[in-house]
Length: 507
Image 1 (cartoon, rainbow, N blue to C red):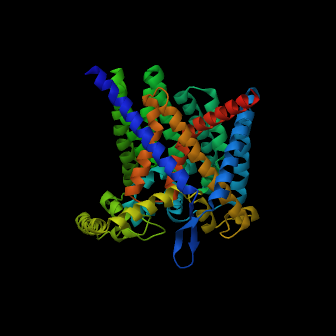
Image 2: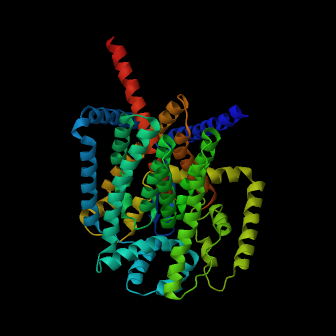
């Protein structure tokens, strides 16, 4: 019985790694033939177009990118004693801050709603609590509260620029945490250096800072929680487990998408118990869930108490599921305003459930009647998210009001600068997928541990969630960053293979 219990974690780790290997290999191969381009038209607004790629140029450019990454990594390792990686991160942060301050990208849509609400709350004005937005998306109050606190502490602060600058700082901090996580999981300083390099060269990370939202703070806290989780697996120190539970809960308060890494670490905790018989970590996993639910509800409750407004129920997950299975919008399963029919205060929960249930039944019936259509739908939904190399940053930057000639050139839809940047991001994405494949192969060929499960399982969970519910390439950014430690290991392997080839050639 004991041997069987120990085999379960090994099997689960192997299965998840193999699934991710198949996913990234498929994306890398498909990406040589097609790119998902996110643009805008006067008629349809946001739209995804699948653009055919020239196979030979795409392969050649990807190989050149890989060789460049290997050379840069070797250089960083050679001069590691001069803290070249730290200097590179500092240079990236300085450049990002200069760009953000000069561009001054204003917010639109949900990003504007949360920013404007935080500013009104800081003035003691709770009118946003009476509009339908927070009555159907009450979880957005999780990011409103810290922004409100900042504004109360520093009246007159330019919240937009402050949050964008904070995003840049958190992006660098997240890169450092993921590098430390890579070093702990794969046990090598080379992979840490490689992770920092890939983070700095990942151009969407610079552009994604324009979003004033809970994503980047959530991402930083989730990465810190993962690091604490792995530290506990290595040293079994209670403080690390407690920090993991608290950080996970805080990440969930800022953005409920943190439930995906929370679940991944919970599964890892269950598998760890099977071999270690250490039930303490499982208790802290349960604590993270309880704290997350309590803190999220507490944030909403204190706004209800201060405003005297009792919020109605959020849009149901059933309605979100129906939208995620529909055509329409920019691409298959993307936001198409389906849920907005339930925003009205006169729509009851029973009416919403009845309408969504009927629509779900009709859609599933269509898919059963036409399996080829269903397969094409999920294919397009997958590729529209994972092969869109800008993660919606270019589309959003072009849409928003901004200042400065540089920002106009970067985001202009038909501009040369944007075309060059998108080309770079396309080739970088291809290289990252190939490196992730190599990293996963290396992990499968060595002794596997529960710690190696967390990142792939989080990515797999994110993929499955957005394949069922609402899709957007913007949402995939988080999982692209969580891919970096795997790609870093692949980069180290790629460098080692190249070095052995050169040594054999000399011999």
